[in-house]
Length: 272
Ligand SMILES: O=c1ccn([C@@H]2O[C@H](COP(=O)(O)O)[C@@H](O)[C@H]2O)c(=O)[nH]1
Image 1: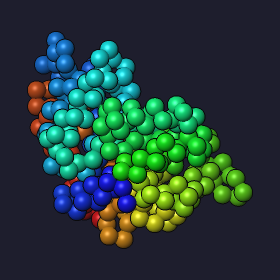
Image 2 (image 1 turned 180 degrees about the vertical axis):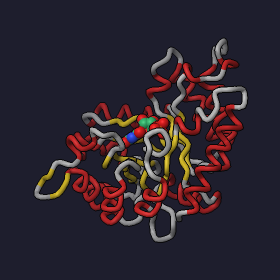
Image 3 (image 1 turned 30 degrees about the horizontal axis):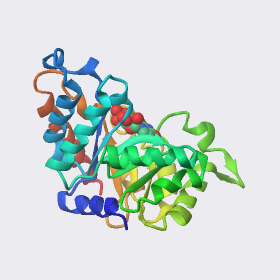
Image 4 (image 1 turned 90 degrees about the vertical axis):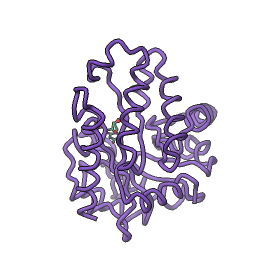
């Protein structure tokens, strides 16, 4: 089992939480105090991280929200270093959805794990095994493959029938049975597709699932937990980004984020 999966399992138990706090910083939504702050991306996210850490089983920074801004990738690098230094028990899943030919994928693996210091990265399996190999070879780290995403367009390709079974089930089986020999794989499954979540859980045993789609996208917490949990009541990183980050856009943003995180952690736990 990879260090990422061990760290995640330990955090599930030690902190009694399945909540993943998503870090999608949008300066247009920041409180006024950040308007003239040259380091607003880092300062806003670090305040959210410190306020919500006790409720988090993982943090998930989405790289686009950093890379969209000049200097944003340096802010991301510093933010992950801040999490690793101050909250070392909480794994960081870099949401980058990488996938390319092997030689380029090698560079993406260096980017995620060595430059940014993430414990795991989200990956697009569409280009097949050789595009995943540079990540799978890092068996201390985690590879979180898109399986059934949370958006409406997930149906366009992911539900197409191949040999009588939807494409997303082929992804789930292939990752669980072929790609996970080092025990370092996980899957992304949207909370907005609870029936498909149940199907995927039945196919992949205890493999961890990253679940976006709660909060702003309207996924149902009870259905997510009931259909996605493992026999021991864990197995899930249930993500909320905007619902936590922007619980208040006032001076009390960090306290409001902590309250939103605690409330969602508690709601999740009521259904475990
Ligand atoms: O299927 C997917 C895969 C990834 N995401 C990402 O998760 C968060 C969701 O943000 P919310 O504000 O909680 O809706 C965001 O970073 C997406 O890029 C997803 O939503 N669905």
